[in-house]
Figure 1: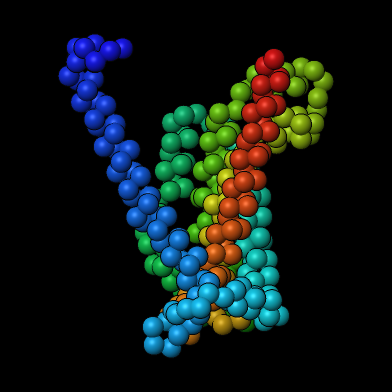
Figure 2: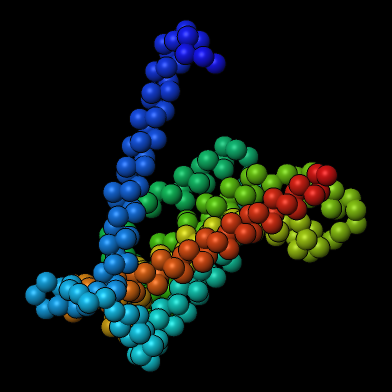
Length: 299
């Protein structure tokens, strides 16, 4: 198309292209200013040296990363990872059948149930956590109700334990596991499942060889959305776990706000980011594998 033909294009096409370019520019500017540059600064800060007055100074060093070899921080990291892994597993065990059941009902009920799922997001998570704290405290509603019914003699000791932290994380992050699983279940073709049954597969074989592989991208997406945030939600451990159940997020917060050791806090943030990058790579590899499987089946 020569220049004279381009001039003959309708004005609404030209305005549409201009709008598209402006939109792309705004998106890229937003990502560069609020995502790329802050992350570069965090990575740079992790290699600088701590200073009492200016927080950061040269020379560049890897000392902040080497400190994670310390058994104290290894123990905190592994404890945080274990609580995040248990939280993710509970969310998956509960969320997988929940998402499947929701995808099986009528469209009207699906919309209503998904609305109920996301309604808690309308309230601040801190407010909801303090409500949970009032319920599970030794003199809270739960213990008072159980004592009143004669089921227990002494108040339950749930608050400031690992169980309380995991319960709080599951309560906050459960919708993030259900939403991607619900998406893959609604996109799954029923005729593939019916074909498996027609070919003689029992329910377990159909689930293991058909349903589970097709829903793997949703599982990995849910794990991504639950595991990493579970390691960083420091306020859950502060409100429900006390000082014995720390998350990696508590280390990052204390290093930036209390200890004023910005390089070490930045190094912890970078390690979390790298972990997320590894999980995202696993997600794309799984999605690619599922795509190839579907292509081969169609072929």
